[in-house]
Image 1: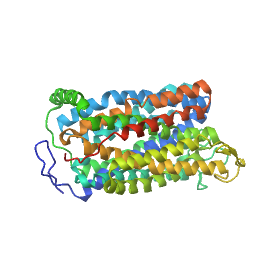
Image 2: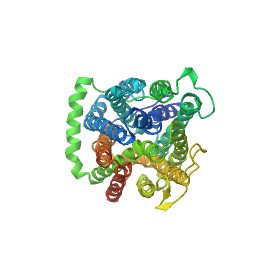
Image 3: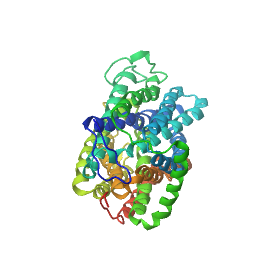
Image 4: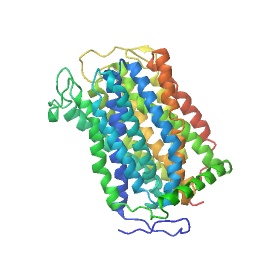
Length: 464
């Protein structure tokens, strides 16, 4: 396996072999359990239901912590991306921020139920892990142009997201089937007693998702470090710092003249804020609306992840065939429809029409409203993956090839600079109204504005 990696002055390039590409794809597999287990389906709902005083205050506290992490990521990501472009290396940055992910995620084990004293430390650990995983993703994304030709970027991006969703599914199956048990029955989803003697009464099966996420990342990110070639080193870190900051200033100054990139980054800023907030609070919202426990929320997560796997795979093919902008537009329209309908779903009604509520102690998802929520969740899962995959594909088409990490830093900036606003808005509205539904309603605005701005973006080839 050999590769001639591209530089600013060298357009002729060959690409690494299959092992390098597959190993890069496994980064998504390695990182996805953090989003699946921690931020969406297991730990966040557990925190809101059992650690925080009540689900509404739990949603608010989680929102404030997410906002703080998002602000830090927004401020630092373009600077670090510019430095990485100047230094040439990606892997050292991925390794460094991967360490933060592992440390922060592992520390979530301290989140014992009913103990308010652990809340500040728990939220700090969550913020540290979030910073780590997001920055590691910035530099992983920046490796994409060295792996496949431009006409296969969409398929690579979509395959990465789909593979990540499969990893998320397997991590959820592991937790629900073997580790997390119902506190009343002491049995997991598969009817087993939890492995390693995990105590259902103190929710050790929910809390173990933090250390499990860290171990999972270490194991499955290793192939990328072993088999995927990095950019060659260009400058020492001290020199790269000055050069990177100068390039960043030039890029920011040129953005008003690069209207398509500027409009896309602005659109990405808005709709990504809505999408991240939707994923972050979807499980918490279900826990408060339907009273779902970890097993129900986790099963819901598995169903959504399966939908996301197929959505990511299909979206990658549509990206190469139709272009990423059309894929993003279609995804946003479906997401907008789904969130509007979700706001009309209550435990005993759908679209304001009364339905029979679920029977206490009955089978999983027996209520009509629960089944409707699952269908709408599948739409979100199936379109969220291609939306994110096509977004990074569109950036590669628009950005200068010799400053790709810097623009992925700006991409992360626009994905995070207002990312604290969505969670903060949800947290503030939820806290003020004591209504989870009122907090979630704010997301409609993000998707509508993102869709309008995206319409003004002119798509072009990466080689232009």
